[in-house]
Length: 112
Length: 111
Image (cartoon, rainbow over all chains, first blue to last red; front, top):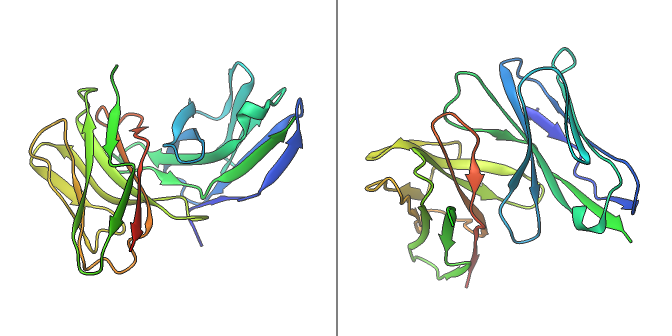
């Protein structure tokens, strides 16, 4: 079993829809949670970074962490065609200087 | 502009050949990382370095080698021992124990 599970999609939604992307994890030592967006043939860029359980909002994006359920989500409101990309969740523990553990990524297409 | 530069964008390797992928950063970050990305598998860590002249193996180091002679540079060599090298290679850097920032990758293919 992978430490981080993420539905690979692909996911297609119409423009303006609310998108929900999710990851589950098994390692209770994970404390820092990130969402990266990756456009085709580009490197991942950081979208959201959270530490504690709860919600964090940044514009149209909301990151949600539920440590008790080991479940994190990214919500995109009023989705745009420019949001079409692969979304990767990533996480690490407080004592882990070495690496992030990534989900496999969800491919999202927002149709105009 | 500050950032991470990977070169070349595309690279082709012949059988039995070693190839070196370049990664340079001008962000003054202490730590640097190399990942391999395959379709549907997310990113897997090859090597990482937290300080000059020191580096550690990641989860899939076999067939790869690195050096860290300068803070700004962390080149990755894909050796002939790596039997399945076709992938998208990503370099990242971070201030120590902070968020990682990525370059735009090198796509390696076999001729």
